[in-house]
Length: 221
Length: 221
Ligand SMILES: N[C@@H](CCC(=O)N[C@@H](CS)C(=O)NCC(=O)O)C(=O)O
Ligand SMILES: N[C@@H](CCC(=O)N[C@@H](CS)C(=O)NCC(=O)O)C(=O)O
Image (cartoon, rainbow over all chains, first blue to last red):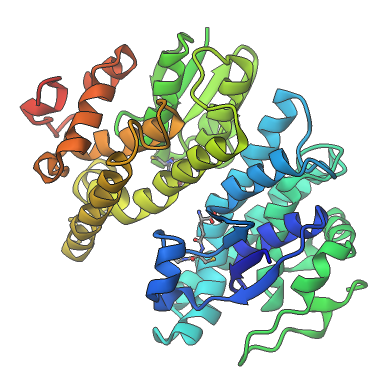
């Protein structure tokens, strides 16, 4: 049986879950407390990070590499366009969300507000939280700017770029850190992606000690 | 004329420089003090990061997306294998070096020892430097482990994975932070990659105030 070692509020795990579900590849989800770095986990992925995907007899890590692999081995439905320019734009945005958005927003907000408590590493650092909120506004505005010109983030078709973005945003939405009133087009985009069957499992996630707000799982938020 | 906006000791810029040179795509190098975030630079790349490549009339950012684009549009010589499993391994390792190695080693060593001074943000934090040196040993051992089973990092052909790794290591070698005595196979691998014509421009880099050690540009180090 295929397995995904993941953590509920890990954005990189969520991105892979969305790709798997969209391509109807069934996996058993196994929650991994990756910060405990137990030896079985390190054997599966010496990087000590989630997600790790066991697909048949293969062990795969690094979410961007996993998504490209799924794209090449399970091309339907496609999550990447065909021409080089459009593929570039998808990958540029995946990089933007995996690197820039994650570092500037997710780590600063979710890292401080949730993971410190889950991992037992002290109280939130308010300087980080403030920097994260400030960065959020810039990122939401950038997404709005893109969506004013395109149906989906990287172009006119839904792609891995939308999954990379929604994976990050959905984690922050779990702790009410996304101001959906800031932009109508952004809210519309998120409503479209949230209503896909692939999103269901994300909306059912729970992290003990942190209850999601009622709008979190609501398709009509 | 094609242009690469870069910074000499930026590992992501170096990775792209290596791909461009290997594929014989000529570019003019323009040094960008990216931390000053001037408005022209932000117009070229709203992420405010180097590298940024102007290729014809296109402006490209995000090094992994750029390298994949070059691979698709200039397939010769190939820097990616053809089958999905081998491509996965290349991308996994590119992710490993761009994310894990960069965060654990490059940021902690180069960031503290060089960039604080260049950017004027104070003295090196010795806790970071120590953590970086400790992480270096683990990473060099992991690379050694890979190279004991393969000619190149991701398999038997040179690939983007080798460039991603060499880009990071070469920046740290500039400040003598790579212990080449730790592993014979690793040193052999680096000697092979260092002697490629594509590497020449990296070995000529200079950052004012920081002289590289004599072995840095020496092919026989
Ligand atoms: N580049 C990796 C990043 C994965 C990642 O950073 N995962 C976090 C959880 S969201 C993690 O496992 N962090 C542990 C660590 O960095 O040691 C990927 O895309 O899969
Ligand atoms: N994911 C980006 C990372 C590039 C990056 O972080 N570049 C550094 C210099 S080595 C930078 O410009 N940092 C400025 C910043 O993060 O604001 C890529 O692969 O191009």
